[in-house]
Length: 177
Image (cartoon, rainbow, N blue to C red; front, side, top):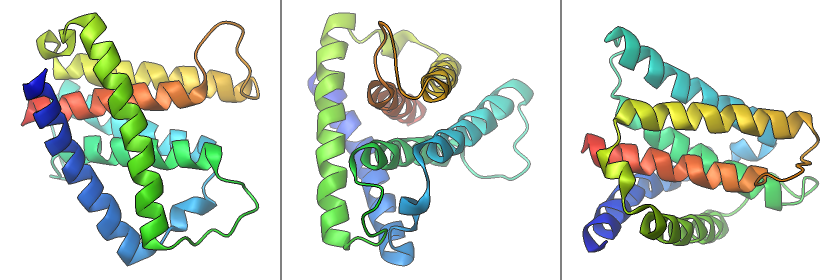
């Protein structure tokens, strides 16, 4: 588990660094996006990865690792959007945004530790393409829950699915590294 935490934190550090640099460049313009739009952004990233995995072609030339980083950061944004009041100011200070980011990634990291212990690090034996498929499946689940106005009868909520996708993307980054 020590190796997993080290690798997880390194992958997360890369995601955090990009998120904070983009926050300094663009501010928190992402605050204008509704959670459904963020779900669609994650879908676009995951679908691009799957297309590249299936065809072996990467015409844009950008590393798919960057797409997994995008998935991680969009998952954090989506979780924040679910919590932050919709009528609040869209622009947030970098320091506040950083603290909110840290809180979300810590919650998701804690969840990973619990699940990873229960599942015995099964993700290490999985193909990266299977992690991509799991992300796409979670997106479809989220879309269904969104279509049901956030209500579920027995299933996890939207936030738990974002956390799972985030962890799958981080596992993919570890596997690719």
